[in-house]
Image (tube, rainbow, N blue to C red; front, side):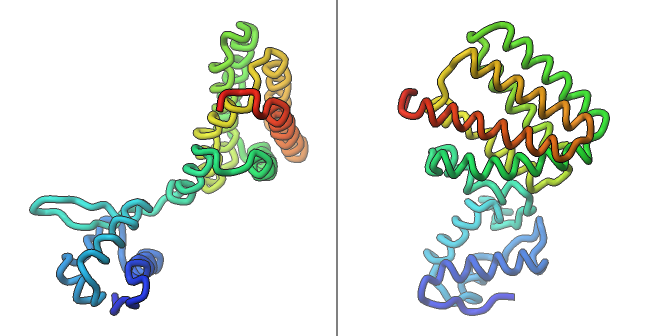
Length: 241
């Protein structure tokens, strides 16, 4: 399965070979990699290089390192979580410019809303209606419910993503909405007018999805992202850093 690692950047070659074995099904979830001594012989590399490669694979979520008598490096199941993990870190630490994040969200949120209009089921329609009622309650409660309103907004977006029935889109959007709060805290002014406009957008998104209006849902979601980004651009630099 493995061959001698290329000596230049050897740890990267070790990573590449193990990743390829996972991708091509030679290694399955739950499989245990050979013992360290055997891996050193197979890759013809040092213990330090091997351990560095395994640490990177563990960080990527591809292997799980267990210690003890029955320990070793075990292959983990590859899920959509790994797809979005690195992007989550970039968003969490605000390493992606606001305009680039908005451009990305505009396209993805529009596509996902369109799919949701076509693929949603009765349970998801009911949940969207309930969340919209919750958002209305927080809006009517005023600016003191800002955080609760924003949390409900995120839950609506995630329900729409689930209704689209595409695990890649759902995973990526979950990552975005779990981390984008840092951008809101920094750039978004807490104003009742923003809550009101945002609620109108959410109503439009939910209404078009419930009606099965794919194009209407796409336009509503895109318009919502554009509006929210404009608010953040207007508030840029005025919020806490």
